[in-house]
Image 1 (cartoon, rainbow, N blue to C red):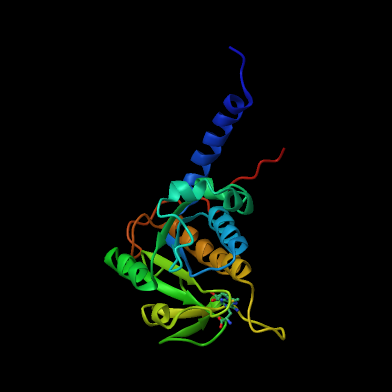
Image 2: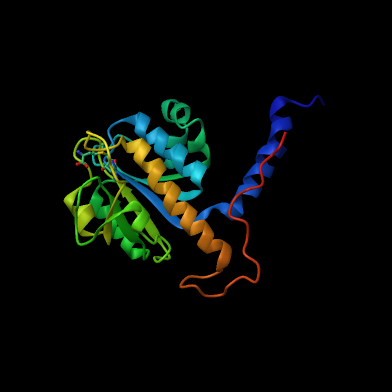
Length: 217
Ligand SMILES: C[S@@+](CC[C@H](N)C(=O)[O-])C[C@H]1O[C@@H](n2cnc3c(N)ncnc32)[C@H](O)[C@@H]1O
């Protein structure tokens, strides 16, 4: 039987999926709270996939997305905007911020929120944070207009800001996810390369690589 294009690409896709597995950040979730612009959701899913974040949670009080993430994956607009990253990314939706916080807390996740403003019990700049302290971490991004909700702030451990040097108040939601998740995943990958377990237990004799060897072709 003649080999089809799909048959030809499948092993290379599988090979890539296996190669990236050790670099994925375990127990790290990006939460998007009440996003309005599908382009931003596509960008975040793309960033999440590219940085090796484990999952995306979407707080969707307006019921804009299906319950079943398989159905979400098949949405053409989202697939196109995320350059198909949605196919490879676990996405779960919640009806409310409260439901999402309850779920995360039940699973022992610590939440941190992001905002250009000073909020909550502790506010820091991105580069001041240690994002490896919590074994399970959820990083929240707020709505394009209103930002992060007071409830998400209240149920989070701290608020992280990307320093701003311009005349504008904030960055775009999708852009800020890229910047924040880059720092968080970099730190957590370094941690995972050195330790097998939480709280700096079970140190590896030889640290694992933190970047993938690049294909030189
Ligand atoms: C367009 S901003 C929302 C602006 C809104 N007026 C506010 O008060 O936050 C959308 C989201 O992007 C993220 N964001 C934007 N700029 C940021 C910054 N400088 N530091 C941290 N997060 C930022 C936050 O998650 C924010 O909720």
